Structure formats: C-alpha cells, structure tokens
Length: 503
Image (cartoon, rainbow, N blue to C red; front, side, top):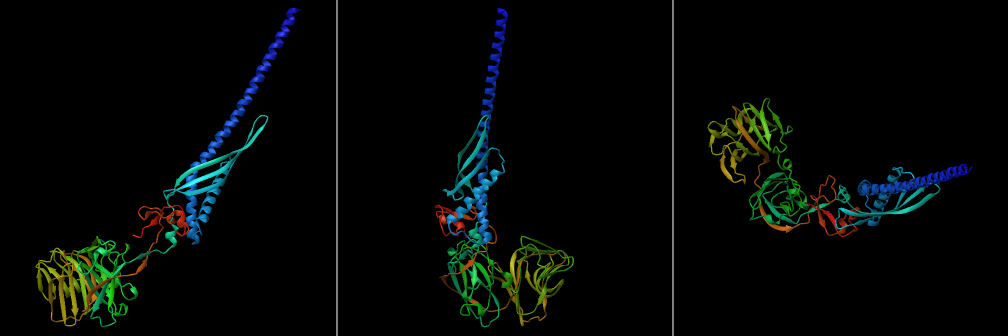
C-alpha cells in the first residue's frame, strides 16, 4: 500500500514538472515571437529610411528640373527666392510621401512634414534637410504597441542637367566698344556697289579686338548702325586683312561713311558674301550649289575642304545666268600644268569667249593669245577680268590684292556669256572662290576710331544647362545661383553662382 501511494505521488510530481516545463517553453516561444516582431519593425524602419536616402538625390533633381520647365513653359519667373524654394520643397515633400505609399509596408507609415533646401559653397550642390514622423503599431500576443518616431535626414545633393530658364527666356546682347570710320570717295549715285577695304596695323587697331585671331566679331555698318552686307576675304592678325562691302549712298552716314565695328565677345560671324556680290560661291558646304550652276553631262568634279576641283575631258561647270559688260569677275584658283583649262566668260566647252586659258605652253589670255607663261601655274592666285564697253582688263593679284600681272585690251566684246569653269584633255583646275561685282572707281579714306554703343541680340537657339563649364563661369554673386536665376536674377540665394559667358 505504501508502494502504491509512493508511485502515485511520483506520477503526480512528473506531471507537475512536465506542465511547468511546457508552460515555460510556451512563454519563451511567445517572447521570441514578440522579439522577432520588434526586430521586424526595426528592419522595416531602416528600410524606409534608406529608401528615402537612396532616392532623395533623384527626387530633388526632379524638383529643380520641374521648376525650370514650369518657368519656361509659363514664361514667368518666380517672384522671389521664397516662392521658388517653396515650390521645390513642396514638390520634394509630396513626391517622397506619395512614393512611400507605394511601398505598401504593413503596420508602418511615414509622413514627411518639412523639407528645407539651402545653398552651399558650390552652386551646383544644394543642402537638403527633411524631417517627418514614422507611425507604427506592433501586435504582440496580449497587447499592441502603437507609437511614432521622428525621422531626420540631412544630405548634400549635386544638381545636373538643369535647363537654364534665365537664358531661355531672356534676350542677351553682345556689345561692341569701337568703330572705325571709313569715308568713301566718288560715290555719286544711289546704286549698289561692291568695294573692298584693306586693313593693316597702320590704319586698324587689332589689339582693340576681343579676339584678334578671328574676324567673327567684325561688323560693317552704315547710317543708324544698320548692318551692311560684307565678306572677309582674308584675315591676318597684325597683318593685311581684306573686307568686301556692298554699299549704297542711301544707307551710309552722310551719304558717304561706313563704320567697321570691333571689340566684342561675339563669336558668330554675320558675313553675307552672297548679298555682297552679284554672284558668289565659295563651295563651303562641300557641294555644288545647283541654283547657281549648270553641270554639263558627264563632267568630272569634286569638292573637298571647300575647294572645287574640275578635271577630265569635256567637263564644264557654268552659271545659270549670263553676263555682259561692266562687270568684274574675280576668282581665286590654282591653274595646274595639265592642259586644257579655262575660266571666265565662256559658253560651256566653248573657248571663244573671254578669260584665262591654259594649254601645253602655259597660261594665256583668251581670246587675245597673250601669253603669261608658266610662272603662275601650280599655285593659288586671284584672277580678275574687267569687261568694259571699250576695253577688257586682265589682272593677276596675290592674296592681299597686290597686282602681280596686268594687261588691258583696247576693245570690248558685247556678247553675254555665262561664268564658266572648263577642262579638256585631262586638264585639272582648283577653285577656292569665285565672285562677280560691278565696275566702279570708288576709293576710301580710313578715319578715326570712336567708341560705339552698337549691340546685337545673341542667337541662343538651344537649351543651356546650368553650370556647364564650357558655357558658364563661377562668380561671387548669389543672383546667379540656380534659385537666383529662377527669379530672373533679381534676388540672391547664397553668395555664389554660375553666370553664362557671352563668348
């Protein structure tokens, strides 16, 4: 009986120990589960914070980009820096909040309350500070934890490819500092005439140019600073330069004065040789202008580096228009020693006209049979044919229009001919440019240099990106910060910015 009682007590004790053991295990498992849920929340919180940090750069750049496009589309700048910043900060805040909703994280939500954008020492880098609240609830076995935690992020973000609305909407101007007076003599009618002006260090201050190595800043103007058609045949800094100009008494100051302008950062030329001359081609598109020229069937020609090469048997390039007397034909060409070549007033593949002719004996005047010889072959010279009613003048110039050779007939030819470039018998000739002008006896006198207030709008016909180092310069002026430019450079934001270079 005692044995039976002891056995019963032992069974009861084992049962009690087992119950306590399993109860302890259950409590431990529940604690582990709750710890896991708490750690899951911590992981989710870190995930959300990292999502914001990793995407903040793109969101802020997008905000600046949209602000710029808004200005350009509506053609209206922000009234002040506060308005510009408010737009960008609100855009950033709303973009982050809407993005967080797409994450679809259970038991956790984020709301960004404030975004602050501030300048740094680098105008292409902005500081961003944001704060918000992370709301959560954690369901435990016997309770729920509900709470909020503040989130704060501070970061510097580099901007890139932000279109500059200031340049897009404003008309910017190039200004000129100097004008050189040129008085014309023997201009006695109201017709158009083409003349040339020679500049050299004795009559022109190359050092007063913004960039004397290039003639792009040169302008030629008349009365009321109206631009005249001109072409710069030759530009030689500190040497001899040649400018051709079309003039008309009605367009000149006092009926006889034009001005050459210089001293400007302008980098775009306004030359217009096709308006300067009656006929002109310099083959600068590496193709033949078929509105000017006819091409004889089977003619062989090439254009490379703006040089026209005509070659082969029975090749002829000739103008669509024909011309008679009282014109001067000028062209820069290289007659080679390969006969036959002829350029001048000729019908196509017909040497019975007037011009320059190369056969096996050398260079001739056609149709005078006057020999020039071999000296001018295989090199570039400027050739002239002046057709007047009772005479024809043939001149060979060097590149600064000094006469190398000259001959005048004592009769004229009244027939009209096209301007023609011809080769036969495998002849080869190279032509740099060719022009036709009226014959006149206008001369000029170089006068004084004066200051001028001439200006031109800059043809900015494309988008410029703020801070592009090839177009912008760093300045200590907060009006040229990106936010400053969003106000049309009327207000400063920070102390530094990038200003568009007008060069």
